[in-house]
Amino acid sequence: MTKGNFPVDKLKGIETPFYYYDTDLLKRTLKIVKEETKKYGFIQHYAIKANANRRILELIASEGFGADCVSGNEVKAAITAGFPASKIVFAGVGKTDKEINLALDLNIFCFNVESMPELVVLNELAAKKGKTAQVALRINPNVDAHTHEYITTGLNENKFGFSMAHLDNAIEVLKSLKNLKLIGIHFHIGSQIEDVHTFDPLCDRINELQDLFEAKGMKLENINVGGGFGIDYEDPDANPISDFQRYFELFHKGLKLRDGQVVHFELGRAIVAQCGSLVTKVTYVKHGESKTFVIVDAGMTDLIRPALYQAYHKVENISSDLPIQKYDVVGPICESSDVFVKDYELNESKRGDLLVLRSAGAYGEIMASQYNCRDIPKSYFSDKI
Ligand code: LLP
Image (cartoon, rainbow, N blue to C red; front, top):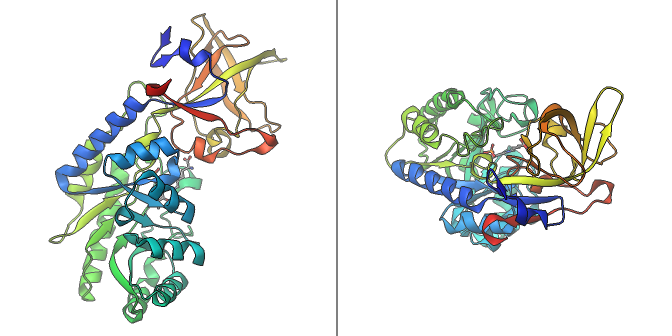
């Protein structure tokens, strides 16, 4: 029996909860991203933070993409999975000396530097190794991403990047740091941005900044616009692949590029979210005073997005075709926020049924924790079960 794309009979035999990845969907998504970026000579660095599962990374690396990392361990994971160092960019407001040294030793493509003290430290560490580090200044463009406040990054009040007010100073300081080479500018305004036009003001801001850098006699070879393109959590079957054509075209039309400039992207979620599901089993159906609870064996430890961002993940019972009932689907964790959906219409469910939480491929497995001494769920792949 299969329901949707789920081979129920095969999944039934696996210990729950677990992450299940549709490798075919991932490959189709990668193919489209590759085609659309190729049209304009754009470069995509997959944002490893979205999902660092070894097999997922290997599949993405094998398609020739670069990697966007935010920790030394992400850099190591990228290298292990086959991303060449020459395609690795490294961002983050708090890079430690150890992480910087690792990346310097590997000769990564670019450090996306986020503050003045980081510029100074990077220069010192590069000098000690007799190296020149390639850097892009991460600029906080003060552009509203119109998304959840926890995943907005490009406003003045956010901790990321150089503020526009400090840019002149940063450029002056950079000129004096002999072991750094400025190769570009970097931005990332936020995540789960559904309306592509949210990126219009980012393009405008980049165009203005290009003039500023040029006026100071500095040539920028690379413009990195970050990631942030969203997915359809409401209806993953109708929209399994985000509209990459519109997304990349917007930047192609919106950016006034100079000769030879290359545009870089750091998409994470839009690449991997829809291919992943969290599969869980109903432990109990509990009738409360005013509600019926479907208690499952997955919890906020395995998919924290609903508890942390009030995010919606579609839930389906793949074992039942019975009439629809209303339930709260909850996990076993000792926290009231351990709720996946409330007053939710689901096929009548019973102990032992398999439920899937959809669109869990991004910021699911990678954000899992062991709270309540739980095991981290295993992962399975559609082409290998
Ligand atoms: N580049 C930088 C510098 C970033 O900070 C991020 C995400 C990305 C790229 C990738 O963004 P994406 O294309 O995946 O939207 N845990 C949250 C999302 C946090 C995103 C953090 N930065 C969630 O589950 O919604």
